[in-house]
Length: 279
Image (tube, rainbow, N blue to C red; front, side, top):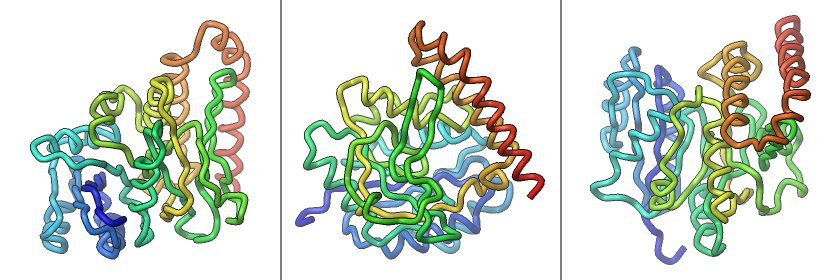
């Protein structure tokens, strides 16, 4: 872009200094000329703050006393930007590696599409760099189902088209600073999962659009904080998150269908967990 508008990348850390170091090392190679990094430390006890300050003295760190979770930690980081706010903010998981060009396509889509309110990159598995983790998101409040497009599929032309999508994963997305503030940030009642879907649903209900932008690429070490993609802790949090999402957004008729179908989905989650344990 001829004039790079200001961007702040917020990276949340909780007892994950090794992951965060790798993430920051990739961010240092980003070619966007006008961006800052803010590390929000969520009450780590592993010496993260001291280590990150020593290795990256140029990076701002907001050290919180307690672990406020995904929503609370990111909200506090966002609030700290208020004295000198950027034009755009990117929320980025610390268990990611970014492409050098990942910022510009996300910002460009927000600038060129009148009703774009949120942009999200193509996300690959970190341990299999051509295997897709996210290429768009589906939300169905009739069934209570939430899932990624392209998950566990090899990359190809079918996943390389920019398109509107139902929700942006909280792993990484970009918004205008003013609009994230207007929407009130993340709902802190969510238990780490589905607060990202909740935000996207509010964005879409306000007449804005969520865009999948495949020219922006990152790699994700899936569920590193909770022991893997099908860890018990993750599945429990996901189930609670889906329940709160449905409670907040479903209409009375959708509640009837969800009451019938959601138990089936929970059984499928349990089967996945059992299968993972026995492998």
